[in-house]
Amino acid sequence: MKIFYSEHQTDYNTYTFSYAVYCIKENNSELPAIYEKGFLPYTGNYQIESDIFYMARSLRVNLGDFEDSSENRRVDRKIAELNIQVEVVEKSKFDLQNPEFQRFCTEYAEERFSGGNMASDRLDYVLSRGLLTHIFAFRTENKVLGYVFTALENDILHYWFSFYEVEYIKLSLGKWMMWRVIRWAKDNGLNYCYLGTCYKEKALYKVRDHKGTEFFDGAKWNNDDELLKRLCKSDEDKRETDLFKLGIV
Image (cartoon, rainbow, N blue to C red):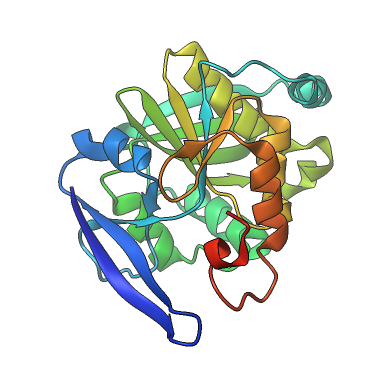
């Protein structure tokens, strides 16, 4: 892997000089180490051919500490009536060009994605990435209810993008799918399941719902849930400087 820095904002009044941190993946065997260092895949520029990762406040489940919570069991009971079957398919064996699959993903993203969509060109770009290795398909006897795109390498899995039938949102289908993938990772002997970023209070459901969560604090993985809650609550505040100078961390 190759790590590089991109200069961002400068404020001489407070001596605050910020840099965004990126990583270039050179082969898939590096994925566990890349995620361990707090990086997540970047897909904002479709012209980039390399797999680029950005450093962020990401969240993972330490599967050694994971066990089903009362909330997991409650959602599982609600969803049981649907009798959902889960199929884990290698990307190379999945029909990525199936128009119904592509429609399902783009329509869900248009309605539910926050801060961006999954138009056909972006979807094609994501599907072309080498780090996408497996697709979880959630089906009943008669219809598809959802998909999850994942990166699986050695002892880690990244829960990357998810798409589901919004008519079942009151049954907490999205929450159930996340729990079900984490449960699969645990049952298959993996060590970590990465859940993407954790910013603002709306992301804290990932922490409330799942035992064994840790967040990347810029230097290490941290299991201080109270600190994470304070950070998420402060994310929408207009800051004059960085958290260190504000005395938050």
